[in-house]
Amino acid sequence: MPREIVSVQLGQCGNQIGSLFWQRLCAEHGINKDGILEEWATEGGDRKDVFFYQADDEHYIPRAILVDLEPRVINTILSSPYRDLYNPENIFLSKEGGGAGNNWANGYASGERCYEEVMEMIDREAEGSDSLEGFMMMHSIAGGTGSGMGSYLLERLNDKFPKKLLQTYSVFPNQVDGDVVVQPYNSVLTLKRLVNNADSVVVLDNAALQRLSSEGGALSSGQSFDQTNQLVSTVISASTQTLRYPGYMNNDLVGIIASLIPTPRCHFLITSYTPFMSDMIDKASFFCNSPDIIPHLMRDVQARSVRKTTVLDVMRRLLQPKNRMVSAIPSKSSCYISILNIIQGDVDPSDVHQSLLRIRERQLASFIPWGPASIQVALTRKSPYVTASHRVSGLMLANHTSMASLFKRILDQFDRLKRRNAFMDQYRKERMFEHGLEEFDDSRATVEETMNEYKACESPDYISYRCRELATVKALAEPDPRHWTLNVWAQQEFHTGWARGVRMYRVYLRLLFPDTILITQF
Image (cartoon, rainbow, N blue to C red):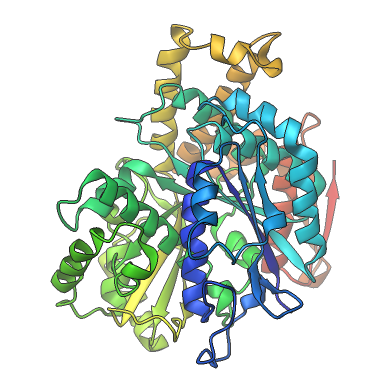
């Protein structure tokens, strides 16, 4: 039985990358622009039902909710060749149509006003699922709609579906030359909600994405923007590959999250993908809105296709900092908490084993001192309907302590603005801030705590630090480990994030000790 996932696309950024994501999924599953399965798409073994459902006329419809406060991007989607793919009842456009003005408070207030209408769409998709596993949100944390309205919906989804997983694909702003002056405020206010309400956050940093997308040649800004969105859609598609083409492991979202996130607060994941152009080139004309980008892409793939890809080559490149899609600056003490490599292609498992041995011998990755060197590899086959330029490609999802440096840069920018009380009047206009700006300080404190926790992960004493700060976990063992009882004592003043954290601990322990009795005491 498929474990369905409902996607929620918010704002300009979320809907642009979401649109490309659905186009890519259609290509990989042999579904045409009208949602009809192609006659030649006879290969089995895929699980379309995770992200699509079939209407009464057997058309495939995405399990997607499209939300925006201004109409430009959604109107572009509705005038594209894929306009008949989506369920029109799952598209929300604000009646005012003015957007959130890049203001988090405006977007949050709009979320309150539009809550009933949007939640009705989400409820309808959730109730139409046989075994809903969770939600996937695509948004930016810098603007107004994706950050503000996204924050409000995260809180409400957490309250309404406490047992369902929430994974976000969050685009972080370019902190050097961002085009939104209040993006540090918006980012910190959103990060608080991502810390407290999301189970997993896949971080996609605009600065790193723009650098990677422009390395193939001298592209104009518009072409680079198209290629950046294409790269993001490739990453999202690859990260769901094991869900859609399942194997023996990591074939559901909870398995992926539990393997990557041993502690609940450190749930911000970095990504790497290689070869960059492996799956996107042959379908360039299929995906891109700008035909001028195609010659550049083809020239790039001709330059790259001289390399013979192997499992070792792919896994080694995934570990290189220059290929990360996050502009975090690793220090000498930075290390991996966990790694999941999703390898696509016709791969011999013995090659994977040998590659892991070589990586350990060469010490290409350093890991936390208080846990095992956790490199997991999931093998998945590629879509038979998309011609790839390389024999093997791979995506790395990793939990890495260098995320602390990204949080620090965001906090430094936040402090510089806050010290001068710059642009605060824009936020005081909204009801949430009319009685004070304490929410700014609370959000900053939450982000700083998360930053400090990532730093603490680098210490051998992290386990004792975690127990002091959050809880004491005791195992009352009898001779037969099947009769262990694990008791979790939490602080009295726990917040929503910690409550979800206890649940994630239980999920993690359940996977490790399937026959163990788990008792939670507060």
